Length: 193
Image 1 (cartoon, rainbow, N blue to C red):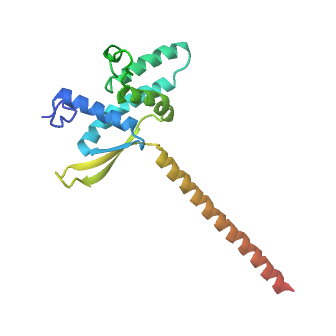
Image 2 (image 1 turned 90 degrees about the vertical axis):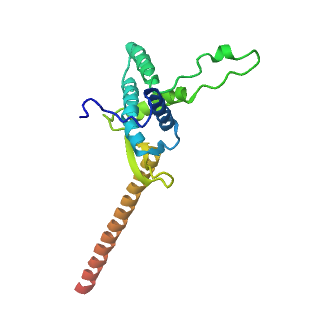
């Protein structure tokens, strides 16, 4: 029986699996297109992992007041556990005259999560990601999938162009109705004379 065996092991030890999920989450949050391509089981494991971090940023976006800053800092520290930490001892590791190494992608992911994504998903109660199946990989036959954040820029552009097309088609329909009614009135008035 499979009682209390909730997650996939993905053929890795616990430490390796958690590190891999942190890397995937960092890649998804930092990606320009708000999407990454991975295998289907990894995408299915990544979805709840990333959505918990986004929920923390969403809660922080809805806070206000003086206690909101303290709670926001606590939520930011909790969300940082979903990503790899920055360079811990980078100040001591540098020598005089050398520039310090840049912060890691995990720090940038937490920053983007709380600055941008928390505001984007502020009114959304859940379901921040979407998994799209792509088929099988040619080398090993693994089933690939795209995992993406919903309400991304590409989606908004597609909705805006669809609205323009609908408005444009309504204008054409309205023009034909108007010109059709004017023409029929002219015909009627021409027949009466």
